[in-house]
Length: 527
Ligand code: GLN
Image (cartoon, rainbow, N blue to C red; front, side):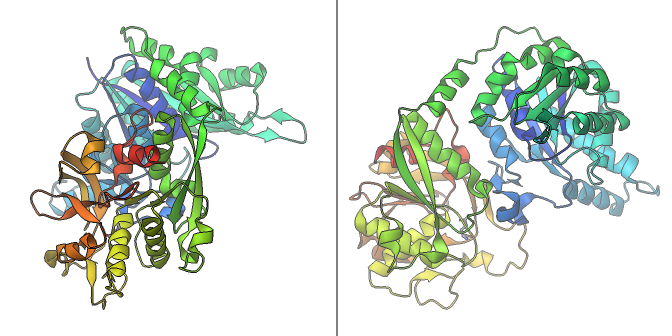
C-alpha cells in the first residue's frame, strides 16, 4: 500500500502530551497489524539535541544509529516497541544546514534560496524519506502552531498534504482546554483559536484531541466541532490520567483507531490491545510491594532529565509486580560523612549518565557505599565510570579519577583514547549509538541477557583504561563485557555482591514498558 501520513500538531500550549498522543495513535495502528514509523520535526535551530541542556530540555535520547535526539523519541520507542533511526529526528538546524550546503555546492543553479520552496522542500523530502517502506508514518511537529519558528514546517506539511492527497494524510491537532476556577468551567475559546490558527495556515484538522484536567461537558466538544469544522465524533477529550500508558486504550475506546482506519480505508482486522490492558493493570495495581531506588543525580528539578532511566526502573518493577519508589539523591550533597544517613533505607542505587565534574565526587561516594555495604547497584555510563574509580580508590590508588574531572590524576582509571585527544569540537564527537559487546559466559550479566553477544547504545567520550583491571579485580570488580573489536570495557560486575553491575552503555534506551531491560530486571530481582 502507499504510505499514509498522520501529522500531529499542537495548539494553545506545548507540553500537554502531543508526543504521547502521536505515539499512542501509532500503537493503535501497530495493534491493527500495520508497519508504523514516527518522526519528530523540531523547529529549534539546533542541529540535534546533543548539545541541549538536559535540565531544561529533558534527556537526550540516543537512537541505535547514534542520533542524539529529543526525548519524545524515547516515548515513541517505548509505545511502539520499535527502534528508530536518525531519520525520525528532524531539527530545523539540520534542514537549514543541508540547504546552505546545497547552495554552496551550486545546486540551486543561480536562483535565490528561500524558505519557500527550498527549506519547505527539504522538509518534505525528510518526511517522505522517513516514511518510505512503512504503511503509516506519523509526523509530530514540535511547539505550537502560530509559533514563528514552526511556520516553515507547517507550510511543508500543507504542501505535503496537497501533493499526496487528503485521503493519504490525516491531521491531528492537540489542543488544551483550560479550567476557570472562578466560574467552574472548562473553556474552549483558546482551543477554538488554535484550530483557527491551523486552518489559517491551510490545514483542516481531521481529529481534535482536547487535553483537559477536568471533565468536559458535551456542549464544549460540540462547540469545538462546530467552530473547528471537525466531525463531532472526531473531537475527543483526553483527560489527564494517572499513567501515560492508559492513553492508547483511552484513544481506542474513544474511536480514534477506527476513525483513522476508516479515513485511510485500512481494512485490517480488529486491534489487539490485550498487552496494553495488561500493562495498565500492572501499572495501576495497588497490591505491589514498594522498592526504594535511589537515583543519585545532578539535575533534580526536572522529571524529564532522566526519563528513560525512570521508565526503565518502573518497567522492571511492573514485570516483577513491584512498585518503584524513586528517591532523588542530590549527588552534590553526598559526602563520606553523610552517605550512610542519606542513602539509608534504600533497596537499590542507580547512578545514571552525566557530564562534567559537578556532583561526581558524591556519585563516587554513593558507588563506594553501595559496594562496601552490599547494596544492589546499577551504574549507567558515568555510573560505571564512578564504580571503577571507587574500586580503584579502595585498592589504594587514592587519587584515582577520570581525566574528565581531574586531568592531573596519577591514576587515570577513566581517560580518553589516543585518537580522541586532539578533538576540539563538542557536537557529534562521542561514541554514539550501537556497539557490540561480548559478555563472559559465566557472568551475571550474560545470565540476565540469556546470551553473550549483545548490542547496546552508547553516548560517551571517556573509556575505562584496561591498565587498571588488576586494581579493580583486587576488590572483586571484574570486566565481564568488552567490545570484541577494540577490547574496550563495556560491563563490570562484582559477582560476590548481591547485585553490582555497571555498563559503559545506556541500557535504559532499550527498555520497554512491556519488555524491561535485563540489567534493570536483575537489579529489581536482587532486592
Ligand atoms: N562523561 C562521561 C563520558 O563522556 C560519561 C557520559 C555519560 O554518562 N553518558 O565518558
